[in-house]
Length: 266
Image 1 (tube, rainbow, N blue to C red):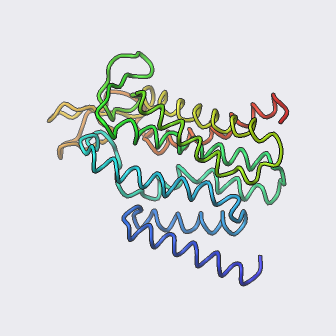
Image 2 (image 1 turned 30 degrees about the vertical axis):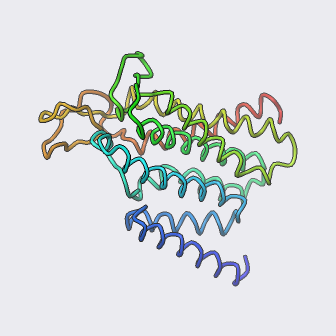
């Protein structure tokens, strides 16, 4: 990396982080982590690696802001909403940062598509949540298929599935310029990988993610403190929150692409 390119990367990463903070898309901690990931991704992977994560972040942030305006009631269920903090940024982009560094040692194009698939998974999951809770709609628990309130971990809907597909599709398209053969096949595998990652996220959310019951309002929530009172844990493992589940989804998305590509020999 030349000095001038390093200066451009530093300036661009800093600009993105400042804008994200000023627009209240990220907390200060989230902005710092985003800056470091941007330095790694842009510096080592250039736009080929940076484009998917940039598209995911800004479009997902826009959808979150839009959903918050249209349906604020579901915020009662989410552990975190609005500005993304450092843990959320790492949960969504940490695997990507690791893979771009690994690519500098293991020069395999397979790693790039594993990376894109991991981003497709977190984007599919994020868009599933935003589309699924933007409008009032029926939701069911992914495990027992019983009716569930919107916003509860593990609840799915038709709107959510449409959002999940669109999220995976958009990220797959962001890699199109760097797919030199088997374009349709690779795009389809990325989309399916994203959907699988999002599906696993919902399964984990309904099974092992910590959920709490508020003694004041009776709501099931991801928050340990609700209505200014300590909520009782009714399901899941205490340390497994939404960030852990998102991180797992990104791993599953990337790993699924790896398995399918090996099986199909693409």
